[in-house]
Length: 434
Image (tube, rainbow, N blue to C red):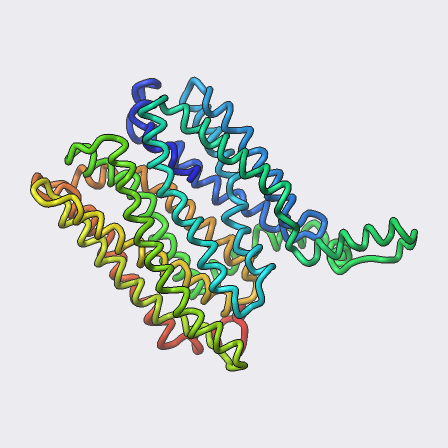
């Protein structure tokens, strides 16, 4: 929610600072870029026994809360951009490491189901942002959007600090070893995590943290294709924060608060997709594992193909039903269908990666870096794209159609994996062998 809560106040920021729409969108772009940079540091730290998951969550969330105060008081666009970037960096662990926490507390057969449930919050959050942000901007001005985030995230910090336990196994053993050394005085008591930390040089840690995500991205075609697909989905999600105001507010005359409610269509589409997806995954993956049957990662691809079809269908419906003389519900239905397809792509592709490759943490970090950089840039050219391709009768049709054709071409990726997945994995030096 923190990324998009700012967007309803863009017009006020343009007026107050005397800037154009592209510059006013930079704080959104830089926040998402912060998502890309943060995990390069925090994800490896969360897998270090001395730190673990919990301390990373608490300290970064505390810094995120503190940053909301100067952001709400800043008096120039440069300062706003810097603060938003830093906020994105410190907001990133909940998204980048949250999936790992789910895997910590669930046995492997239930991980895809748990990840889908956790992802509901991660993907629905940005769509709640414009709703709450629009109310705050109308009632109190754009600065109150950051005051609101300070209150909400501060409450989350308190709850997290007092109720959320450490989940990383190596950290739990590390702390147990420390307690036993203190009780017994036997300094030879040690844990697996401590042994690993002592055995790694600084250069080895640097390779694991910085080079390995890039290496897999460059050398593994399957990972490259998945990264491109997920980056497109993620980017279109963020581009909607530019497209919805163009059509619903500027063309159809919606108020700012009415505009905020239109994003609930995205949430509805995601929830419907999750309600259908979770029971299917339980049947085709979880139940088979529990019954002792082998499951290939390609089992997720039929669902991915369905999601791949829903995405361009939803985009075409959104673009070509968004006219001045038809009911506004048409574009919202299209947006919901796209969101449902995007959710299915996210879940199935991530599950495919987890079941196919070694160094999953590095692959996810590389994916996060690539998709966040791409998504952060999309809103910057969204308005020029739609303004240049607009016609009087179909103001957003052609711009959205370009995205739909890209999504249509991407369907070839899950089809390829479904038909040739085992052969593609057999050629990879990073793949798990079944």
